[in-house]
Image: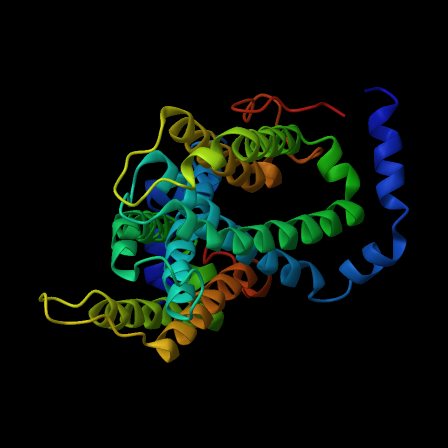
Length: 181
Length: 163
């Protein structure tokens, strides 16, 4: 990690046009607004689908509700784009931020969970008629997805309080440990 | 008004919200407000999109099952919003954008009630309607509320009435 983090900061910071754009008057808040809209799209589409997997709204056929997933993916892509723009503008504020490390970790688990869902569970549940309970594997995947995305929101919102320089090691050592710099 | 802001800002609860270094003070209240936003705007947007023709094989009446989640998000944000307001009354109430945010949310509430009446009709003989214009207006209201809320952090003129 000793070499990796400085290298990553340097690499991200090399995207100068993005940083330049982001430092213009309203660019940062506009991107934040888009990031929050993307978050709502992701929760509205993927979060609802997760609830259906868990067992809420059983009378909606899973294959029918699955049609909303592209809207969740659109929210995800919007947030990956705006997120990358924040990262390229202030790389050290994220790369050395313990809250960001957890955000990435939750996103990786959510991503692996998506792979598990489409490789094993989706083919079983998409043929289920309305009113039939989902198997335990589907409930588990829905619960993991929902908790990971809520975790991503929590870690994302907490970023600001664990920024290197702002992070008060003693006061805010929970839930993330501050990285002294 | 200055006296009123000062009265709130000098209260123990307001001071705690602003000055506590606990992660359970300001950081957690803000986090709760963000989760609530995702739930209320997200589920409401899903209903709006369904009315506009997305995932048309989903029986629209069944989306009612997700409404408790939406209302949970709404009340979580009503409460966390009031708490944030107690922390920073001057900051919010002296910013015109704050009233834009409140008006957007109020309009979104009126719209969801009107939409609900049409898509979840009472009585077995009624068929659900598809109020597409109300659904579009609802999407704009939520986007407006989120945008206004986000810009509050950049457009305030006065943080507190103290000093």
